[in-house]
Image 1 (tube, rainbow, N blue to C red):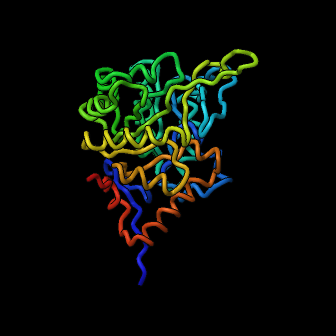
Image 2: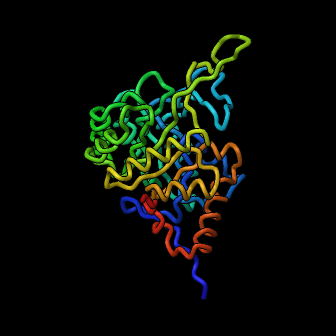
Length: 307
């Protein structure tokens, strides 16, 4: 009898049916995609960043297409933690997939307040801590740009929640390995990387920046080589599960991240290109493992050959 490949992955005691997650900020609160794809086929959904108070975000224009990618300067627009719990979480609780809530804040106190409120809720499996957003004037990247500040932030959050936490790291730093080691020491249960690279677009006729925020976060295929290199470096340096993010549009892209050390991946900009991208990658991984006679997807992790 033919046995299907085992695509399941376990992180910090949480078992995922497959290693494909949808990235924060690209999938709304999940319900927006409910009529477009079968959400139960995802390994998990990561919500857009949730803050203590509602945020309107940055002034428009907030997105612009670039060569092999896109720039966004949304600015963490969201309904705030109270409305999230009341209006968004009930839908997420009904889904047959894992739910990861992304958390952001302008101060460490705000991060702590959000995780404390979420800690009283059912239907959440993990938290992803956004210490890497480049599109806000306060918080975000401020906490993830230096090892010391990243350590303090993650340690404070870890002390106030029973949920496993994923520290989401920025590529806009001097040494991402140092930051990764700092959040590991602070008690993070996993690390996700990379968030967007800082970028800019210019209207040559108006001689002005196209984005209302002037700069934004670059995502999409253009950043994949950077993401691969950083995942490879971090995976070698820490003893934590690493989740790879950056320009993943198809099965081959996902496989590259597994080989360099990621045990799971997140699909972000690909959701805008084709809402079915994540499901196609899940199916593609299953097909690849069958053809290559790989019994478990985890057998591919960190199998990059370097002579």
